[in-house]
Image (tube, rainbow, N blue to C red; front, side):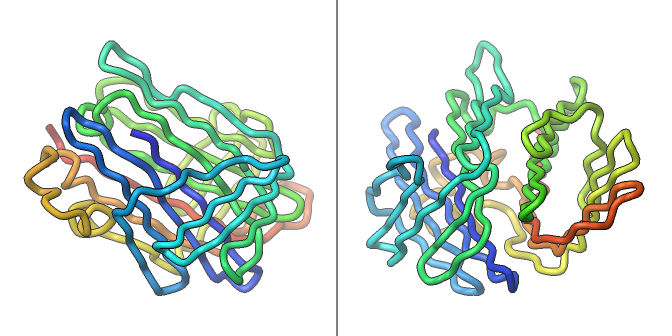
Amino acid sequence: MSKWYLDCVTEAGHVSMAYTGSIKWGPVRLHYSSLLDGSCLRDSLMPHKEPFVDNSVIRWSSGALDVDAEWTPDAAELREVIFESAEGSIEWHCLAPRARARMGRHTGFGYVEQLIMTIAPWKIPIQTLRWGRFLTPSDWIVWIAWIDPQTAPRQILYWNGTLMPNPSIADGRLEFDDGARLLLDRSLTLRHGVLNSTSLGEIPGISGTFPARLLQVNECKWRSRARLERPGQAPVEGWAIHEKVDWPVS
């Protein structure tokens, strides 16, 4: 599975957010794209072009979704192998931790990542995933928290390009060893529900194709007005997009 996530949040907090990718499983080949622009959600199952890099600018367009977009990163890309086993792996490639973005007529700070999975999503040994990104002119923070009751939790958090040790990651706040914290108000819920009724719900025959452990994954994604507080420094405010994803017990 190749899955791209791309977003842009304007200074006023308008969210444009897209997913595009493909799934290959046995004889099944699916292409899927969706675009959330404010409160308007559009989906397409038409074959599509993936985002591509053109002279350091990431570009993506979809005629089916009537969108043309570009991101000009100002931070170095990030790569991590989030999970690896005999069954396969999950590679996270963040092409733009922070970028000047345009999606259609909206401009602001944006973010681009790609996940490449060689393991079936329903076979992943995970209970809860937390992910997010916080972007301002002075600071950016990107985080992933992988929780599996059978193994030690894995937390990946980059702050302005530095991998931070021992962060505390929760739905409403991040905390750091030096006393800094990022507060997330969760003022707007962008999406909430099981995948069979949200991001996968528009795919015909999906319930008869993939196992229930994938279809019953519950996701909640927020747009937060976020406040970064550091001891002895003035706070910094900006927009964050973040989510919590829960897998059903096998």
